[in-house]
Image (cartoon, rainbow, N blue to C red; front, side, top):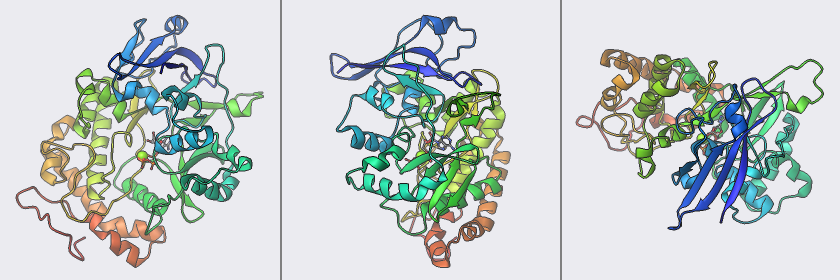
Length: 431
Ligand SMILES: Nc1ncnc2c1ncn2[C@@H]1O[C@H](COP(=O)(O)OP(=O)(O)OP(=O)(O)O)[C@@H](O)[C@H]1O
Ligand SMILES: [Mg+2]
């Protein structure tokens, strides 16, 4: 089935979107999903125009084509809902829909600076978001959606503007104290310590390790409020449209960066930290700083068993220099308890792939502009900070001794290398 959408972007500092091009989604004769994108002539003549992504969709009159990522170019996919938002849209609009419907029906909360319309003449309008008072009543509505219960129409107006953010967990964007926040709710399969508390504690621990993270706070016991890093209120004197006064910064995920390389598009390559570090040379406005920060995040994720560090849990945010990016603040850091000490990250970390060992971490240090000695010093520092502070960070969130004991294996010291590693079950008190 062929379907299409018009693509608009908020250029730096603008509070209204500019039409930039047209996306068509179809199938190849062999039945593969095929996406085509072409920039509009007027956009190409606009001196302030910026490409939708720093690597693949350069400003050019050509028609871009892709069969990677189900025929959806990376920056469009980053602006599209994942499991959670798609589920909500399907509940509100019925059944599986053509791919562009997930762009057009998803609402204004999407990360980044892109918006979509079904015709070129229809400029997408900004929507306003509910306040913090909706969190309690929304809890039941979101749980009902998870459980496939009918959605009360009266309540649907809270979830409808909140369908475009990525990720699998139930979430809503709200306006609170002059900023936008993503509220992450508990999910029905959660058990043990509230994930909000765990995530809040890990963000605090990451900051102690010198990592730049999102700003976050736990409210109502088990909801994590995460400040949106891609939106900032713009104070326009005399502005009538309060809802329109948000600046939106461009965002691309690591997945978009990885898939910009045609050599990767037909493969099952999952991407790696060193690869992202290498690509930073082409799109970061502070390459060495970002590479050092990325190395620290990789080490931290290994030290806290955040093994769900997949390519949409890292991203780049527009920098100050038009067209250039910086690593976005770190987000979505949650330890996972593994049955053995042999662990793999979702992204590759070194010569031995995604296997978590100190040796493997050091093996890729050159990609991060680090000498082995400096890389080792960072690993030592992050590991020592984690070992000293993980309990205090969890205690700060009200975790009980039992809840902490259940998590202690997540913070066990890194295995040296594969020869000397103990890959058996973690024993009590190993942390
Ligand atoms: N503070 C933020 N501001 C703007 N966008 C964000 C922010 N934090 C995360 N995002 C975007 O929202 C998406 C979902 O957020 P997050 O990863 O925290 O949710 P999740 O449901 O826990 O994800 P997962 O499915 O990986 O478990 C991210 O992939 C990222 O694109
Ligand atoms: Mg995520």
